[in-house]
Length: 101
Image (cartoon, rainbow, N blue to C red):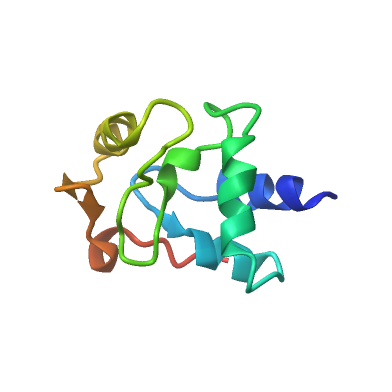
């Protein structure tokens, strides 16, 4: 499985209404120093509806400044449609961070 495929498989498990960070994904797939590469993989996401890259935020809960599929406004809209509160471009990680595998 390629790096990108590992990222996508992990992300498919993140439930609606939850978010994860780039670093969490990198750590979960055994590449703890590859958070930036996770972001690059998300920009190449071949199926954004199937692979919910909008559920990824930075370690502070900030939305992606250059969300690959329409900008941070689209990311915020997608998250809000799942019940995630977005305030001034941030998600409250104490409420919405997924602690899955």
